[in-house]
Length: 99
Figure (cartoon, rainbow, N blue to C red):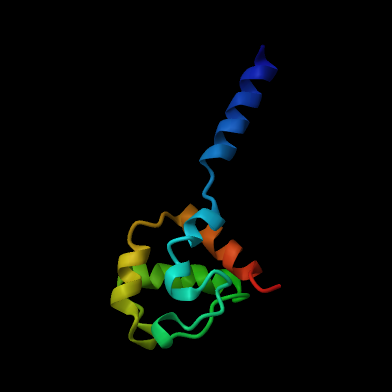
């Protein structure tokens, strides 16, 4: 019985884990499905960027302290609702795009 309960807990945690691909669906409108589009014709493509850099940027946008390419306001709105786990999952997904 303990093994079943433990299995259910582990499975539940996996289901609750942030899904980078699902989170990226909101990003694809500006960055493209492959992450290679310059958002609004301004930003650099994000596909393949290092995950730690992406997390740092998302944290800066969420805090309102980052304004790369004049996109701070737009990105603040996008990053505001992301949790730390969401940011990590999203960064991991983006870092693997185009590879």
